Length: 328
Image (cartoon, rainbow, N blue to C red):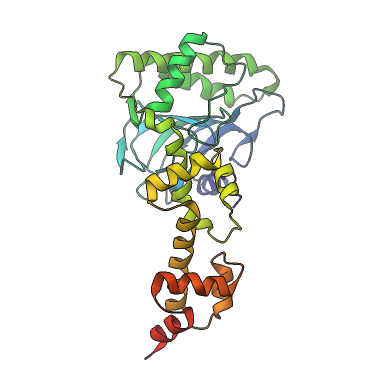
């Protein structure tokens, strides 16, 4: 995994179900999403738009994943379970829509999805960290003030499920018809009008509802929190203080400040803590590995430095630790 940027989900289970004929799918896509490829120059920013229609219960779900853009889904029929980091197995009902911020962790199904027709739009707004400013595609033409208000709500709101209105339903129904068209050369204007209308309709729903805003969702601290959450899965990389700070698009001083606030350790101390924790598990679980192999598997470039740090944290050398747990 290239940890410099999160990798977007590819919806592999959906792709397999579609290829097996287990559901109907119609979509226009970029990257590795399932569907027909969008023409290169058409509506840059759209990475996937379309719908699936499942007429029978499915044996798959979309497990925990992220999307590189803002993701809007609308369930026309059926029910479906959806989860985020803060909401477990919320029930998506017919005529509900959901919005996920770029790179927000979520899953669909518990564990499988059921019968239903689901529409979606994944629109890249050129962010890779929560504190970065959103850059909408230039064909999003709602007024500057409306777009500013919409962006603020989308970036600072944690509510997962919203009740749609007739305009949102109509937009998605028409989008479904357009993406099913065989005449891709003449659909660009229709999609521009429909997606702009959809965003404006969503803003009007927000204006009528009780929207709670949380500024921390777009702060630098949130970026560091997400980085530290992912770090245990990438400890083998040759991290430096500078490369960790660059990952978060922050200077080293601010990065160190937030890291200490969150973990009570410097970034390097926290990285070593994670590496040593993994090393202790390897030494405990796999007695065939050499000390040098464990050190390198956990991101240490020197077995001597590894042994020094290990003894400092656990009070014994890796070899002594290994012998302790290999005794019958």
